[in-house]
Length: 88
Image (cartoon, rainbow, N blue to C red; front, side, top):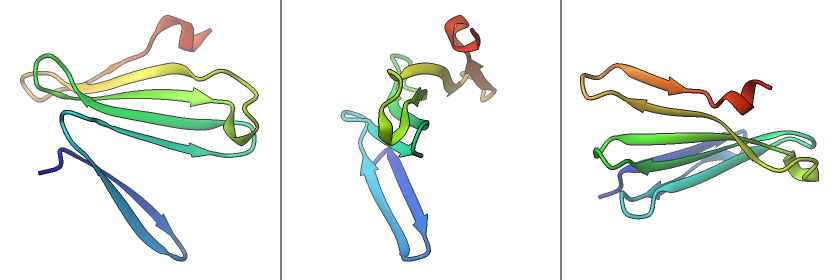
C-alpha cells in the first residue's frame, strides 16, 4: 500500500502518482524562473516528513535549496523547521 500520493489537477483532468515508505515521493512544480519541489519520506521515528525546496524553475536560474521541513510531532502537533540560510 502506498504511503504518499501526489495529485495534479488541470483543466484537462486529474492524475495522481504514489510513493511508498521505502521510496518516498519527489514532486516538482515550476514556473519560468522559480519553482518548488517537495520530497516526501519517512523519518527515523516513522513520521511522514516533507522537505520543501525552491529552485530556478524551468530556466534553472538557481540551484535548488531547502527552505523548510514539515512533519508532525509524536503528539500530533505540526512542526515546521526553516533553515537559517532560507531566510537570507
